[in-house]
Image (cartoon, rainbow, N blue to C red):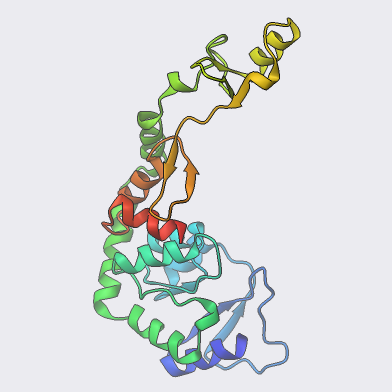
Length: 240
C-alpha cells in the first residue's frame, strides 16, 4: 500500500503529506521520496485547510472535515458507510467517484488525485465549504430531529414520563421497563404477554428491515448539500 501511494503521488506530479494513521502506515523499509512527508497524528480540521485536496477512507467525520475545509476529496472506502459518503462527495462534484481499496492501483489513485485538482472540482468543493461554514449544523440537526420525532408515541401508557420499551400483545398499551416490572410483580401481567415495542419499521429498496424513528437521517443528509439524491437513492447507497 505504501509503495503504491508513493508511485501514485509521483505519477500525479504532486507533493503529499501521508499520515501513518491507526494502521501504522509507514515507510520504514522504503525510501521516502523528497516530495512526500510522513505525518503522525494531526488534527484534520487544521491540516485540511493547508492542502490542495484530501485522500482518505471516507469515514463520516473525516469526510465532513474535508468538505467543511472546502477541499476536493478522494475517497478510498474500506467498509461500512464509507462507500456511501464517497458517492455523496462525487455526486456533489467535490471529488471523483470512490475506488474501493481492493480495486485501487497507483494509476487509479493518480487519476483520482488529478481529477480532484481540476478547477471545476476545486470550485465546487470551495462552494460547499463556504455553504457549510454559514450553517448551524448542531442547531438544525437537533431541530430536525425534534420536529420529526413523535414523542407521544414513545411514552409509556402507564408512566408517561418514561420511554416505552414493550407493548402488550394484541393491544396498543405501551410499557416502560419500570411499569412492566411493577405490573408483573403485582401479578397483573406476565412477561409472555409482552412484545418488543418498535416505533416504526422501514422496508428499504433492498428489502432489508431497518427500525427507524423517522426520516431524520435522510433529511439531514440532504440538508448538508452533498448532492440532490432522492430518499430512495440515498437508502439504496446506504444499504449497499
